Length: 278
Image (tube, rainbow, N blue to C red; front, side, top):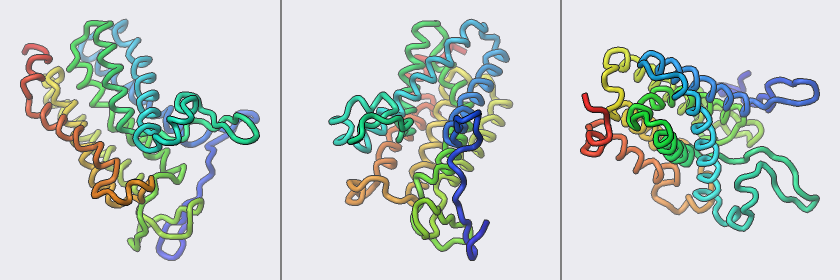
């Protein structure tokens, strides 16, 4: 539906119902993200001759690492004052109100924290299974952009992480927020990540021998967080303290990931030490 030349955006929060229980779009997108990552990495493991029993624990490590890291990242990076005084709400999807505790789901997940949590989880997985660290990171990195695509689509369906006011023809009016046409920053990110996935997949088909060197891990970090850094200029400030900063929190947190990504793509000394001997 359009309003003047803009896109009027007010989708229902719930994608469908099972009995009296509603499944939210955001939850559905997270499930699609995890499922796509699972299937892609499973296929990569099989093509590379890695035993099935070494793949099975990977999903659990990734799920726990991403969810825990993303949740703690949001709480500590964006709302530390509130959550440090309400520590129970960091890990449990509930909020304390004057009427008592209510279930809210996880209100706030940060991609930077999720990335850090994933890296820690994969380090633990490698210690447990003995699979080469950079081979695991490279395989996960090939699947990551399509996972990130689904998560940002979930943000779009939730009308959250909205963009700044804009007069471009493709601007969205997020009806649940206000009546201003705005940049659809979530959609910009989602489409960028989808493009990165197909580029990375095309490189893998021609240069599969680079798996285990850290190249794909570096490519993923560099492209995703460089895009995140640039697209942040189109987004509305999420927290009040960011208004006085030359860069917002998302941009500040992206810089070390970009630096690490470039280092890995260039085959830095530690990548040569940790990677598989070719």
